[in-house]
Image (cartoon, rainbow, N blue to C red; front, side, top):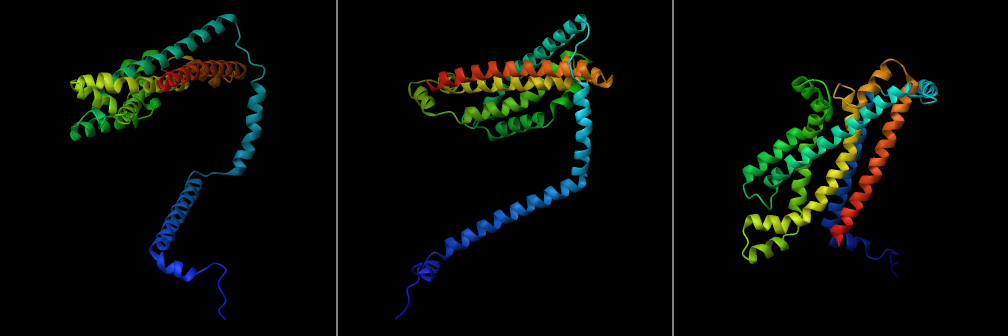
Length: 284
């Protein structure tokens, strides 16, 4: 009497589904190879960058010393407080103006990069590569470039944020336009509307809430970016923060950091409420 395998006809299953099993083994081997490759690259990066847990551990003591020197936060004379508040307002102005200008400039060009609006492949390709080129340069690099073009000050900072966000907005806006529902567009065309009417009444009502949400998020993020580019001379509170670090005025450094954190948290709260309201309105 032949004993029945507790797993059934395992050999028969293997023969009938041989291709599927081989494909599964191939997928697992590819995933394992990718994971091993990433581990090897991580190890090479750690070695090339001289990563050391000993140095981190030794540095924690110095970090604690800096934290001790920063307490309690202090801004000095009352006149200095007004200077810092004015610089903070300047930072917010840089972020707001740069974000707004980038959105206004990128919005019309985003239609040239959208597949469902522009039929010319050459036009779409050139527009997309233009956005990629602009976006590939960091905001800090743009700040250094604009400082040499227009000089030191907040104007250079606003131009740097505008240029950097222009490429990012172009990509995000074009993707939002491409993912819009085509049924309203078809309805406008069926009613006798032309291409401009299809975009105005079929695409824009869908994408404007999403675009507004993206612009609000970038304004929040650019508040931090405006602080960083101020360190290289693009105006705002970052310039004062850099000066206080160079002169080892750690209580003032602590006060400026807390001022920036409170401002960013407040903007984050306001923009989150606005984005929620916009998305909720869109859902309705």
